Each structure stands twice: as C-alpha cells, then as structure tokens.
Image 1 (cartoon, rainbow, N blue to C red):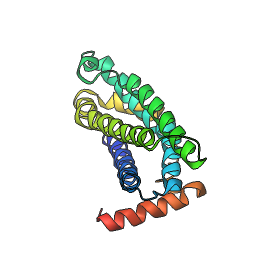
Image 2: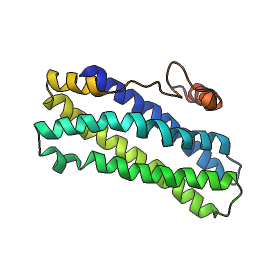
Image 3: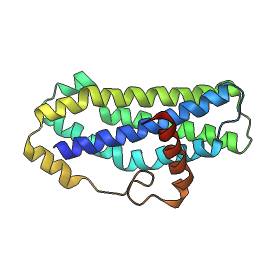
Length: 186
C-alpha cells in the first residue's frame, strides 16, 4: 500500500515541478519577455505521454478498488476516471497552443496565456483532489489484498523524464529542472 501511494505522490511532486517551471515561463511571457518555448514544448510532450499512459491508469486502479469498497467515494471525490479524460483534453489544447506558437501560427497572446494558465490551474486542482481526498480514503479503506491486486496490475514503465533512464529528448528539460530546483532550493 505505502509503496503505491508513495510512488503516486512522488509523481505528483514531479508534475508540480513542471507546473512551477511552466508558471515561470508564463511569467516571462506575460512580462513580454521571450519564454523558453522549447522547455514549454518538452513539458507539453511529457504531459501528453507519461501521465496519460502510466500515472493516471495507476490512479484509476486505486479509484476503482476504492469505489468497490466504498461506493460513497464517487460522491465524495467525483469520478477520477472522468477527471483524467478531462485532463487529457486540457493537455491536448496545451500541446496545440505551444506547437502553434513554435510554428509561428496565429494565436493571440491572450489565448495562449489563457490556455497555459488554465492547464496549470486544472492540473493543480486535480492533484490537490487526489492528494487531499482520494489517497487518504484509499489508505483508510483498501485492504492489503486490494493493494496487492493493484500492484500486480500496475505496469512499471520508466518515467522518460524523472526515471532512472531518462530519454534523450528530455535531456534539456531535465537540465532545466535541475537548475530550477537549485535556484529555488528544492
């Protein structure tokens, strides 16, 4: 049990670092400076891949097991699986906005700012919901057998950015994260 929740919480901390960096880049954009669009694009690519393919499916397993044990959970935390679908649509809009800017396609500053800011806000709200409600309820209600079943169904896949073997396409982003963490004392 602890291992699964610890892993999901670590992934949330990693996602929060990316959101912090996005906020920093958006602040540069808002100040009429030039943000690092390559960093923003790498973050967009990461969110398009790893969370949807690995992180959210783990949480969905926890959610389903919890709803089986406690059907009232759906009224407490809502439908986490539906939330993940909504987050997926926000990720696609975020990716499209960044790619449009990278290709010099027409997108107003206000529209770009809105899409990125909305993406950041919704990601943070979603993480807060899971950390504040879903995970504590799961720890309280799920049995050792439930956790063993969840762990047996989780496919371990290397995180292409934060994992032990980061992919080359994320090397620059990883360096930026390390620099950002060093500057911000995390």
